Amino acid sequence: MKASHPKLAKFAKAKNKSRIFLRVLCELCVRFFLQVELVAGVRNVIIRCKIGLKMLVHIVCWKYKADTTEKQRADHVAQLRALQGVIPNIESFEVGTDILRLDRSFDTGLVAKYPDRSALDFYNDHPEHQKVVAIGKQIAEKVVSVDFFD
Image 1 (cartoon, helix red, strand yellow):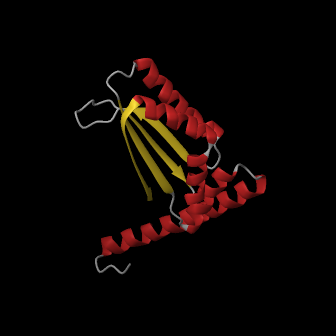
Image 2: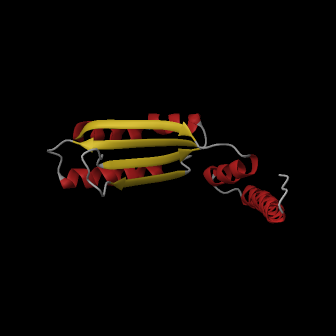
Image 3: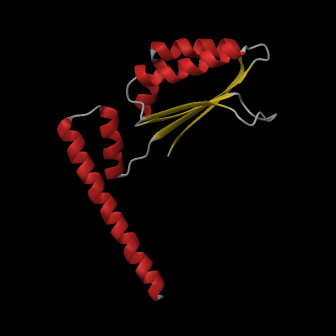
């Protein structure tokens, strides 16, 4: 980055130092995590930081039927949250319920990140996931999803 103004040149120099720091930090993390051989998911996050690969983001939202009870809703959310502890290669996994309750709002949402398409496919095909899918189909009037690289 070439800057003609002294303040811009100072900013560009600081930005470059930050990038170098992050690269060194990522390299140290990769070396540490690979040496102690922690779970593959943690290593993948650190390695992706090092080489700049993108994560696959999976978002799902459920609009429950009017006759779905609060207990059914809470059980569904709990079963969704439990998937992270059962299915490998999930980098991050968040499940929550809507707080605004607008006409356009869905009731429950899930945002998960995976290192690649094969990890998402493994999650989708996993028997525990399929059990929760079946419950979601019974209590939801509509389900939407989107998947993209971030």
